[in-house]
Length: 258
Image 1 (tube, rainbow, N blue to C red):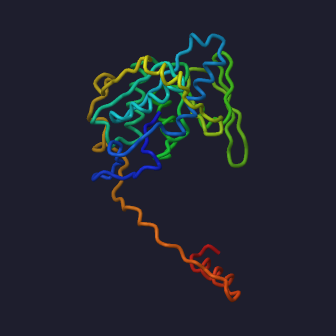
Image 2 (spheres, one colour; image 1 turned 90 degrees about the vertical axis):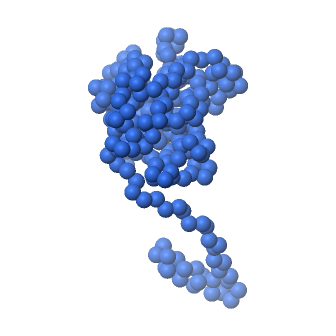
Image 3 (tube, rainbow, N blue to C red; image 1 turned 45 degrees about the vertical axis):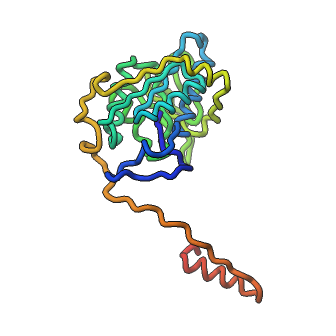
């Protein structure tokens, strides 16, 4: 899961053109809530739910633990938060490395479930990178998920067709926002989350050298960022003499909308 800046907050870049993830309000990425929901549903539908453990894992600054807490409130059984100052500015390659090593530290599960993308970067590449690093098959962009035993079958909706793809666990699975609405944490769930185990790990804990992550070794960087200009007042077209439609058409043409 990913801790992302709140889209309704005043999002901004740091002086090094990385996203400010400390000085702005953040939350669990909405697209990752669907992944949590599907994990919980798979547990509930299993023959022995008591034998299934749902672990919520995230990497990020100290405040990113709020994303894990949200998953625990929804119903996840335990949480893992990897935090280290050296991670700041990491690209997809370094992110997938840290996630893979953290998963190996905890113990590779039957299913690694991710959202289809994050709401801040929308890269959609981390699940595939994670599958490669863990040497697991990947079944991505699932809109419908069915499981039986160690078999998983999904539907993937494309622009021209719907594919049905099957695989055998263990595997990496990513889900879309078409899988169904994520549940809201109940009061009971919020109170229960306070007693659930939540482990904090550093890079050294998972065996990752600080020189392998961070902005200095990133393969992709932002060279320049410009603040969004303030919104200007709109133009009012009055139709007092019947010329309003002409004025509107001329405006649309000038903006190359038609």
